[in-house]
Length: 250
Image (tube, rainbow, N blue to C red; front, top):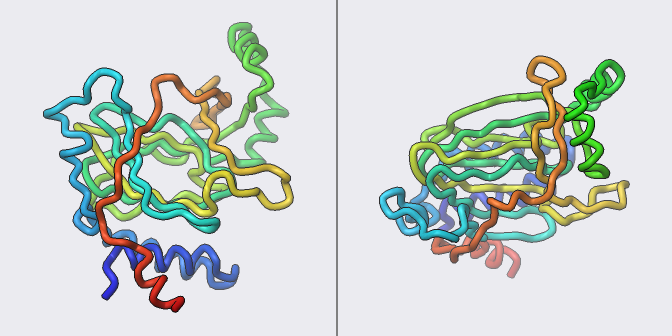
């Protein structure tokens, strides 16, 4: 008999390989299944990975990643954020994603890149401040993008899953709040897969806010991986999510 994490993976594979006419329905089904997932379903004990009463020793990674599953269609894993740590502002190139908090509490600040908004800002706004202009030139040729602040939410394990789409909430940063936190992360297609008709792969890019160009609209500067951010890994202790898949294929 399958359990919840197996149900999640099965529906994720169905969703992200489905035809366009049924994709939205399958995505709703996937979200509903992910909403029910708990830390117990994946045998997650955050006390062993980020207990605020036992702070990490100096030099320890601020974030731990637990790999659950990955193929060419979908990647699924768990991020554990230590107390007062965060995932830096980063993107998800033409990807869908679901985030479900399993333990603790996080703050998610999300931005949407909007082509029409970018064109409007580029045609009407110039970086006139000399410091901003100097910084932009100094950091070239790293990319500048214009993005609109979409949401700034505090989320815990009682909340439904959060959804990002290719053009909505596609850049975000995630902070732990009031202690360590952990969340399930589902992305499709995975990073490093090819973006159709572009000749490029999906790399994870990091950003800093360069300027505020309009109410809730920001100019973001692509940056290198921040030196304060890196991850270590921990083994997945939950049930094998591929068991039903293997039995169905035999």
